[in-house]
Amino acid sequence: MTMPKGPLAGIKVLDLSRVLAGPWASQIFADLGAEVVKIERPGAGDDTRTWGPPFADNGLSAYFCATNRGKRSVTVDMAAPEGLAIIRRMAQEADVVLENFKVGGLRKLGLDYESLKAINPRLVYCSITGFGQTGPYAPRAGYDFLMQGMGGLMSVTGVPEGEPMKAGVAVVDVFTGLYASTAVLAALVERGRSGLGQYIDLALFDVQIAAMANQISSYLISGEQPQRLGNAHPSIVPYQVFGTRDGHLILAVGNDEQFAKFCRLAGRAELAADVRFAKNPDRVRNRAELVPILEEILRARTTREWCVGLEENGVPGGPINGFADLDDDPQVQARGIFNDLGGGVRAVANPMRFDRTPVDDRRQPPQLGADTDEVLAGLGISADEIAALRAKGVV
Image (cartoon, rainbow, N blue to C red; front, side, top):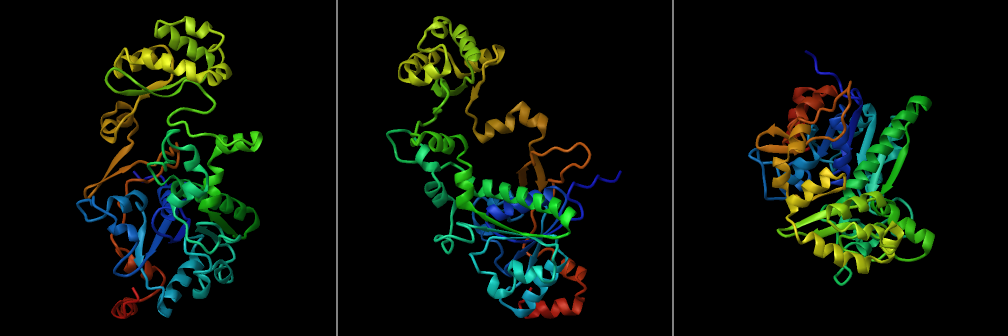
């Protein structure tokens, strides 16, 4: 039986990006059925190929595997005129170009949007930089950690008495990859109406500020800086981590009814009737009084005892799992969230689930330059020409 094609089948993506934000977006395109050709430096490739250990049995780093499944790797030396000519030929046939070079880095090579638009007016071109194409910070390099600090995330992350903390994952890069994929898809839809491509300017700094969601909204409305609250929530109580008899759990009460249910489960129904705690705004104002009471209550039972009771009573809560816990979790197993791609590569499934045009997220990340000959042959370059390019170190 023929496998149904993904929703982006027929779309060609020329991926000039590396590390995380750009490759995260292009991996989404590959999962959705697009043909993604990743351009890498001969002999070296994407920096993340060496970011390890750990490495899979096939020699690929875990970091590289996280962001590059389903792509085709072509090694081309951009410093060589022949290499630039190859990339321009690819761009002429591409629907999308994705790049994360410094501002102006590709203009001197003739690979910027205006240069490629001249040979392919339907091209959707997405540039990912630290601070965008305009403004006083535009020339600066941008890194996720720096963006978490400069963009406000670290100002609200960490315990009140400790130092500001970054998130445990490069969330700005991941968010930027998601915004990039959304922007490109929107541009492709618009191209269906106008017949024209367009340029997308995407900045990690902009994305980090946008992703502050309710926290930045609270500041814009009140003029007050939200404070670091550790694992607590600025606008909901109780909504944080609590210690139990044998560990920790998350209690995530989202409304007054859930709080009343929790109080009955805990044998302290009177707390839900207390005027200080009956309504969420009152609980927020009086968190300093309520939280110590809840801490004492929750220490009386084990994490599992609480989790069972919370689920039975319809109160949101749960354990703090490590990755090994996820591996054994029945929900993870039922949803098929972990895939074995072979070669010692295990990967997280794409969370988008289509009923007619499923994603194809079970293809391995490519070895460096594994698809060079095939892709170049598809451009009409002969085997002899490819051999000559290889001898010169162009590919």
